[in-house]
Image (cartoon, rainbow, N blue to C red):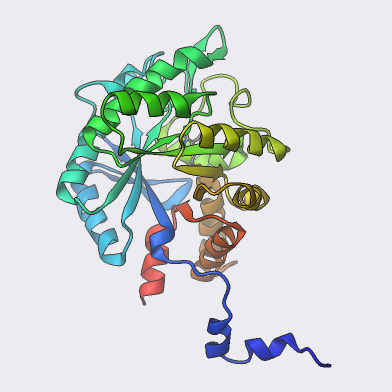
Length: 323
Ligand code: PBG
């Protein structure tokens, strides 16, 4: 045997020297759920270890994350049913607690990066990401609503907008709205290849945002499709997306790789709620080692080609690498 691959694995120093993928806390984005009120820290049943926070308790939590090196947060609002309507008007209302929270977070911690969600579902009485008329999701009437939501979030000081709605043309529409309103520095991380996935269950529990009727298959992508992700990415890049996202991550590593090979725009991947819930459940049962499993998962997403990863493991991973 002239070639023995094991020689390059024989000790820690050599293994580290030839290590191809590095994953650091700086690659992670931490999704966080907030609700209106005070003194609230409610654990999400289907996503243990994750909570719905009120702003007063979220501030010390963010401070703790910062000490661990987690600097980028994606904030999602849990809105009470009575504030929801067909046109998601609360999403851009003056008194909206989510906008207030974004503003306070940016004022309190100027060094953090705050990402927001742009989609109608948390505010929609129909539980859909777009406007519903006669049971159909109306693309072009949704865009102005997303535009108002995006401008309100930009005014609150958000750094990155995350359009997660999958309407056609929304990246270009939002880019234009931002620019004409003077927000040329606000970035767009587009949910580019967002699949109609069963892995969003715990997230919808957290926000109580499941569709009241029907499903999301007329706007989110068919999990069977790969080339279609190239069409979506071509559009989003040409419409001005600063980052293109693949979601979910684990069952879609091939899509992450495909976009990495074909585009120069930074790629992000959303390690979604259901993917994390599986690890929490198995490790609680003693079937998997929590830290080892989550680290391997995150590493695989990076290896596939993601530059950034949105993950509910962000804080725990940061604590794990620190010790
Ligand atoms: C909705 C939205 C969803 C997620 C992020 N934004 C759910 C959905 O499309 O129904 C899912 C995130 C997760 O599961 O962690 N616009």
